Amino acid sequence: MGIKPAKDVIEYIKQKHNYDLKYWDFIITYDEIGERELAYCYNPYKGIERIDNIPETSKIRIKNAKIFEPLDIYQKCAIYAMVEAPASLITGRFGSGKTLLATATALSLTKKKIFITRPPIGISSDYDIGFLPGSKDEKMLEWAGGFLSALNYLYRDLKGQTYDSIKSQLFFEKFEIIPLNMIQGVSILEGEILIVDEIQLVTREYMSMILSRMSDGSKLFLLGDLHQTYSTIEKQDSGLYRLQQVLPHEALAWVDLQNIYRNKLTEIAIKLLE
Image 1: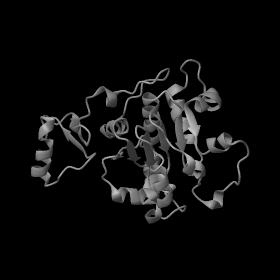
Image 2 (image 1 turned 60 degrees about the vertical axis):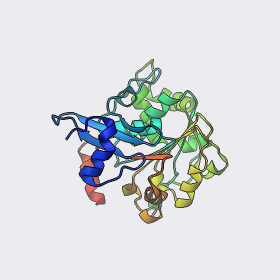
Image 3 (image 1 turned 135 degrees about the vertical axis):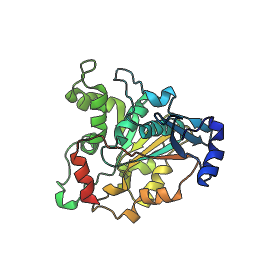
């Protein structure tokens, strides 16, 4: 059923579902003929806003890169959250587009270097290859494959960019890698963006530390999936698990992506973990 004026959404949800909307709640419905998906958000700074038809969620424009268009209504909600909220938590199974969405959105929002980090933890110590040689950036680049893939998707074959040039040059022009063990002394200032990938692998203490690094006017994108803790950390010990329990909060929007955009083998991969 379609919801007409945005001002009626709160009352409609209360009457229809006996639910009081909370900060950063997203409502997905259909138009009156049931063909087009509509999305609304309870933005604590703007009130109820329809978001599926605004330019910011429909196309992301990045200088010298291809135009990025979200593939579904949930990805539109994620983009809106990252643009509007001081901090955003984007969850979803592998292949749902978390890192690509965050990278594209961050590149569209700032000309400054984007700070990125993730736990340098593999899926199991049984497959650990030991210490990696090289500088800090060279070591951490091996853990930042998701961001490299995102840049490759956005820039490859444009203005002569190749995978090698993206890896050796463009990556370091766009990103500043912060090893997670060094984040305690970092402050993310106004106008700066920090993206933390694989957030399900950090502890509650590290999650608290990450959240405390942010200044007014900065942005934080947290990306993760509790299904992908594997044998490295128990779900109940994950900072992501605890964070989800303390939401909602006006400073942090949460969007859970629902669709997967990899090949059919991903369906088998999910069944193996269930």
